Length: 401
Length: 101
Image (cartoon, rainbow over all chains, first blue to last red):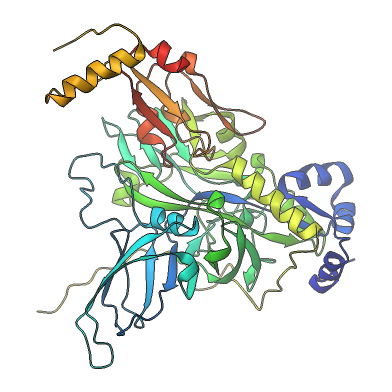
């Protein structure tokens, strides 16, 4: 018999909800069967922790006296976007200081950037906030330099346009004769290593392949605090090919997430430096999945053996946007430390932390068991298969002169 | 120029400080890696670069561990770690002593 989210929330309030992690659900379904698991389990918790470049902090520093309409702003020397209201700024995770040598000496180190500045703020450290402007009658101030702390800000909202990718590429270097430095890490020549980045069987959207549970308004674990899905993420593509379990065989759905950064924890929000590439922010995300019926029990029992990812050449095919995946491998194979592609054995390494993903799913489970975290009912579903949403390349057109 | 300095750690540090004080730049030939477990998030990005398998991911816990005995201080993992959890420690005394210190 199907359950409703309000029935599950009532059980959570009474601290009687039965919650397991997505990892535990695999054994539950194997031992008890789908029908019994659907009856006995109320919520399955998921988790993921890895670099998520499309992240950033929206903050409001409060007005100075005299007032200022900030035109340009920097946090610890990292530029923040301020083309919005007077003292609102957005600090992007991948922003680098203007005086960073970047890749002038290759490969650049990218030791500090937006992701690190966000981490410093969330850690409660004082940061240097600098701003300039042209001055107006109502906002006369033209320069500002001050220490600022997240506590003193009116708002500090983590606002991430794209997180928690549903599946992702496995990156290799097939043709370059030297190591290549990518957002997927360092890839040595001759297919010497393969890097992947997904929590697989623990990942939120891999446990909800058709977005039945996770939608706009879903309450989630975000960066150690509470967050919400505010829209489908950028590049959300529900029309990717799926396997017999309904799981996309490549990057597909994404989530746009928002939450109060003042209540977050740097254990789950960390600045990232990718040598030769740039900076980013590693974000911890966990979503609860209500087990409304047998289908949801089946979806959440997915294991690493049943999820495959495409092996993509990052030396030529990815940057030039050509060619096809070199093959498909399962997350069980990836986690074994070795995969075989085209007859060649390749060592694997993961850029996202499965240990942290497991920790996040465990924390979310505890929050729900203790009645501290209620499930949010989606007010709108995410675009599904057949919808217009997609990840299409840019069609470049000549500019009339 | 190679300079071999022997003596107690403190004496060596003083000798290096003296040389640097008169403008001689020194670089330690012996290097060691320091793995900061507090900064490590146990992703495993370093493991893919570690040829002698000093860094590995435990199959059950999925946590990274570092076996100093296997490490050849090639430093490939230093650049590969997105979280700055591995640093090269250049010491003006032997690796073994550095490890004990």
